[in-house]
Image (cartoon, rainbow, N blue to C red):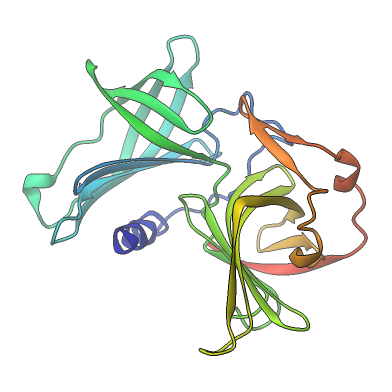
Length: 270
């Protein structure tokens, strides 16, 4: 699974230049498919869509059993909220080596059911054949952000399927594995685990069940991201709790979004 996702991400990132943050500022209620990743798999077969906030999409489908094969396409999309249809206009296609697995990109997706984390859809004119896909909102096509000259220290690495690894170094090296969403000028985090120290004998990993929610303020420029200067270890205290419900992010203490005194600049790799 890891290999499949890694290869898929590499293919998807070849020609995308989307900035990776939603145009919405805190609520995504009417942006619908801005920076979303949809995925489906059954056995070795998979389908994945990425919808950017620039009106473009990327589609990938393939087979990962034994020999990994993938077909991908990209183009423009529009959404009709009355008919609940996404119209796709493909302008680029790349086929895998196994031509028997090549599948043309549907020009239409019909939404049958939709919630915060899943959606049921049909493709083309066959409205009776339904599949349920996993939905990840507020994802980024940026591969990683890093501070200073070395990307192995003080860096944030992203995946299109909604996970991030954040490395911070102060008195000790700390690496955090998180689920993430980006909406407006907020990087929302659900911290799954933290690993402190380096080396085979010096590392200690702690898992969090349930996950710990917190967030960081961010500001986007073309080549850099300005990130609120704060140690995650100091804001894992429940004071920055948030919830995602009905396609809106709700922060319990909004005053914390305004009290930013220091920022760090991170370089963007897309």
